[in-house]
Length: 341
Image 1 (cartoon, rainbow, N blue to C red):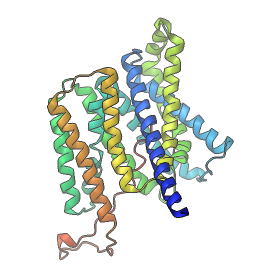
Image 2 (cartoon, rainbow, N blue to C red):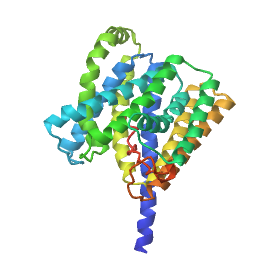
Image 3 (cartoon, rainbow, N blue to C red):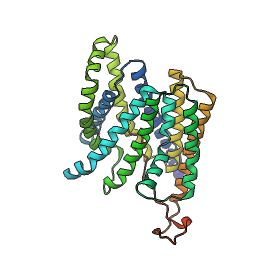
Image 4 (cartoon, rainbow, N blue to C red):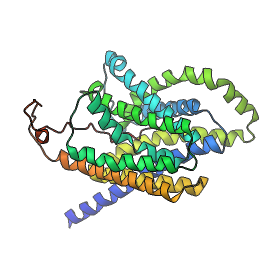
């Protein structure tokens, strides 16, 4: 009886974790798009800076004040040598995401973001010379094909938004790969990651935001007809961005890797559906097919990764005489935290 109740509670906890993760993620995306489109606050650097400030304050409160998470101590030298480069890429990733949201619909942006597994594998193969099982490469075919179909049939296509989303995938992959080497020895969770990276990201972004968007923000403040409610939405998006980080920590510890992968792809479908219901951006039938193929490809990719991770093969260095099918699958680093905002 106790085992049955424990199993039921585990399932319920997993469902609650996934639903709240979906809720925060979709809310952040919709609020950001609303800020750019409905509030006419077309300043992605400033929005990103506000998110970093709110996240830094939130992480400080959780760790130092509420003590809900223990602080992972990092040597001062490592903060600049390891954390700062990660923060810079982290900053670029978030800014590019917000830039893409300004110019293209949420559905298109989320579909392009699903291209991240392909860019991660390609960068590891090209730069780090890591070799992957043929099934990994095969699983990327529907992802790439779906992205191409979606891009060619997108009715609201914008080159700047497309490039920002695409380079955002590269930034996400770079951040994920760098984490393997730069953060080696530190078992960071999402809250500690934000605690250390958000202040650096704010410092990096504050000056460019002030120089490039300061005058525009001041003009917007003077002409906005609903200033108070607009500021509540803008800063509320920053609070939701931090809550998203907290929800990611919860869902990772409440689900399995396979469940996390499937839920992540369904989350994209939920975000696309909700954004279409609110903003009514036109979506063609072929565009919807491309998005579906991409999400199915991402699910297949995650399934293949899971299968290969279960095969505990001995480490075998590649030599000219090593058959290709005997080469060890270089493990992809943990990319569960790619949704941090």
